[in-house]
Length: 216
Image (cartoon, rainbow, N blue to C red):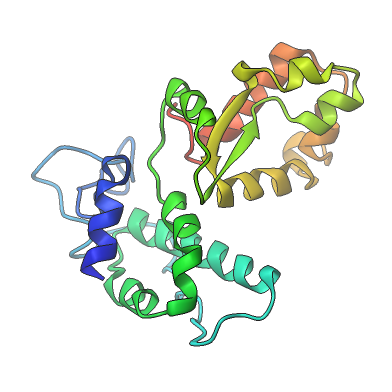
């Protein structure tokens, strides 16, 4: 557990012991350098949110299908992110993961999900380096753009590509296909039909911000 937490701390300066702005304050949940705030990994702080659900059940044996492994990775990474945001201790869960031999190859996906938001320049600069746990992502959603006649040369240009955690890439892809009242009961992909490139880009950047990938 200590080794995993130290590894997470080193990744992009991530520190699970760094204090966060308390619930009810502006910027609640964000990292802060204020030493007077409670350390989130040690004790939970007050929160107006409902109690955190239990962590996902951990199988001692390797799930037989990639779909099952991916489902567990998503639920585990999402639970840890919610726990850190609320100040819930995560030590026992991390310790249980640490002893799983089948989890080792999947660990980069889990760890990448906990990355703090980065600048657009950082996300674009990382595209040239392939790294397990990360995927290349199109800021302007490629399926709807191609359907509306935008050329592949424009869709695949360097300025439209960022490298983001793979699990968040899958989350965003699923979100683009899910109908929402927010978009008049259309999916984001349907909502973007007929929109300009500039509007699609603004939309794609906002999706990255809302997923905690891109700094606001």
